[in-house]
Image 1 (tube, rainbow, N blue to C red):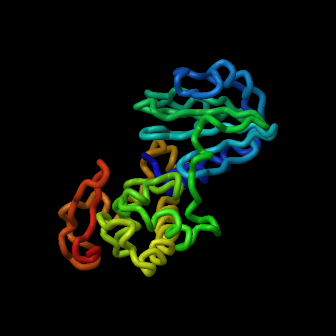
Image 2: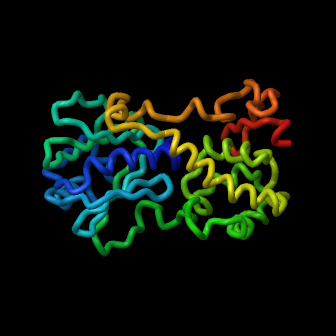
Length: 274
């Protein structure tokens, strides 16, 4: 599943290509992709509207329209957004197409069809997407050690599980929780209620630092993004622990170990994260 760095990368690639453009027509090939309102109403309300800008909230993307209406999208496991010429070969699992006034198309493809769109009118309360349940953004001024201590320090769960709670920190998933804990020298199995003040301070520093690092490493041109069909841009070469079970640790040379926490695999260095 795309996590905060990937979703931010997609936002930075797509926004300049659709900003200020009018939506001429919409084709929905899979009505279930539109969670709210109905697919027909979705198309009727958006046809003729003009894109103002895009934002990101956690793992959600938001397309804001000049009317004040907004489109919310969650990519889930395999969702992908592409801006293409109208004669560009269409991906096999393309479920939704926005035809834009300049002859390009904003296309959404999703092999597993888990992703969802919501369209909300200007003054409509969002009780549909789940955004209102999200915790702080890692780059928020209010995100600091005291916030983490308040929210997590009494938890008996492993700290790895705690970092995945979107109601506390928005946007971190399985990949970057491993990378953050490695950078913080904290064992993912360690119970949150046993962390020291120093460790909470380190986490508060490393969470935005690591996410910003991977956003930077994800940087890609629109041309390369399209050439890779919106998938060939991830920063796998820069991951130090995730997906590297039994490989040597980049810090100490010891063997990285895999464990399962809350049903999710986690990779760590038993020496550096003792």
